[in-house]
Amino acid sequence: MENKNNISAIPQYSLGKILLIWAAAAIPMGILGWFVAPALAQNPQKPDFERLAVLTVGLIWQFVLVVFLLYRETGMLRWSTLRQQLWLSTPRSSQTGETRGRLWWWLVPVVLLTALYEMLVGGIFDTLWVSIFPFFAEPQGFSLGAALDTPEAKSQLVGAWGILGLFLLSALFNTFLGEELLFRGLLLPRMAGVFGKWDWVMNGLLFGLYHLHEPWVIFSGAIEGILLFALPSRYFRSSWFGIIPHSGQSIFFAILILGLVLGLA
Image (cartoon, rainbow, N blue to C red; front, side, top):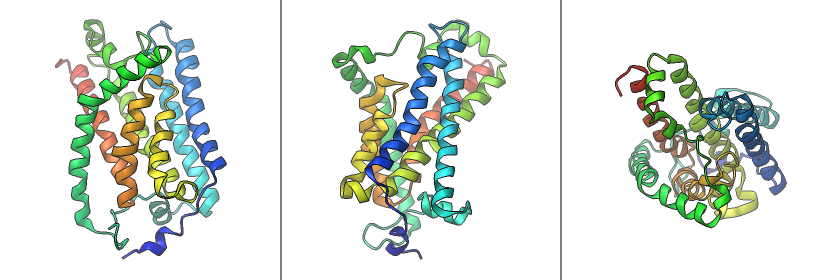
């Protein structure tokens, strides 16, 4: 079994490097979401699927960034090394540092709490945030969920397998190979050197602030990032505790879009 000595082998980043990596992820997403997508959209006021496409490019860039930084750090891209360096491993006991398979069961309450938060609480925080900072409100036509709920969109999506493929690609890089791999896989294990035992709080806060492309969710994203993604990932030393709960919303939308493509909705 691996022990705590293996964990300490992960190098720690300086504050400047942490913020630079954050900026390298957040700023391109902001530019793509607010400038590139409307420029490419047939209707700049409703850049729904164009926005999804260009933001997917930003998420793929985050994966490339993670791979580049890890290669510079380790000099190799061997899976056994990447698995350890990105915490893509079996959860560990917080007391002994040893991996224990039964700790996977803790994913059940984490996934359920994440689903409840997104369905019942996140929207309340978004409303509160926008009431304080109204200039962060989501523009009409930017909501993919609202776009999918119109009769016109439902009829156009029947048989549109390309849209489903685009969403699945976006979801893959959003909740696994992009955001989560960057924030919980790369950054979180390397933030204790600066933030100590509060590294999970700062990781979740940076995750919320990263949403320059969706500023209306900055507050709710930070709370979710701190308590439901970063905290369990840090406690169990496993980035899967951020990846799997974060993927719940993507699975829901994938099923919804599949139903529209099949003409069932």
